[in-house]
Length: 171
Image 1 (cartoon, one colour):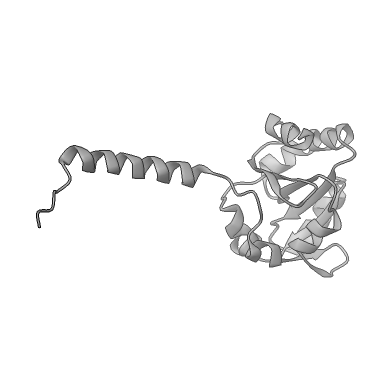
Image 2 (cartoon, helix red, strand yellow; image 1 turned 180 degrees about the horizontal axis):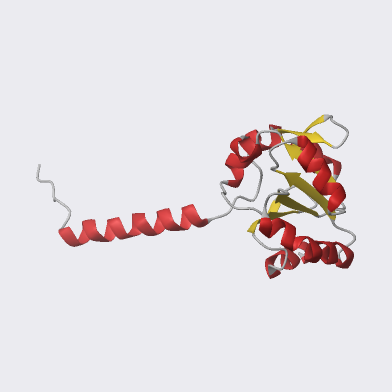
């Protein structure tokens, strides 16, 4: 039986398709939280432990803007005035602030000092836990928009001024 070998041109074409496929698949943003991220535990202001899935479930039927921040993050602090303006412009949105501060005391002190409104949670493992792995980011602030059904409509915005945030909220 005679087997035809693929030509050099055919192999080159296949290679191109594979590269294009990898780029397209690698550049897509998740539309839902991983199971591990949903099960990650955070600390609420009252000291109770709460999982991300409980936070999302508590706001089912509403849009959620998640702000991942820290008091030591210059870009986060500089963005707070615009964030507060944004909250006034979109009062119907639920604002969830997830802090990557290094300790609970500095986190609570920053909330009070900057007079930050919204629901506040401390990420116990910072960006090294399952939620941090899901974000796959080494930069904060980080904004995510979660729709009424708990799906992620916007996975990555680095500034509250990013127009994609408003677009996602108006969907």
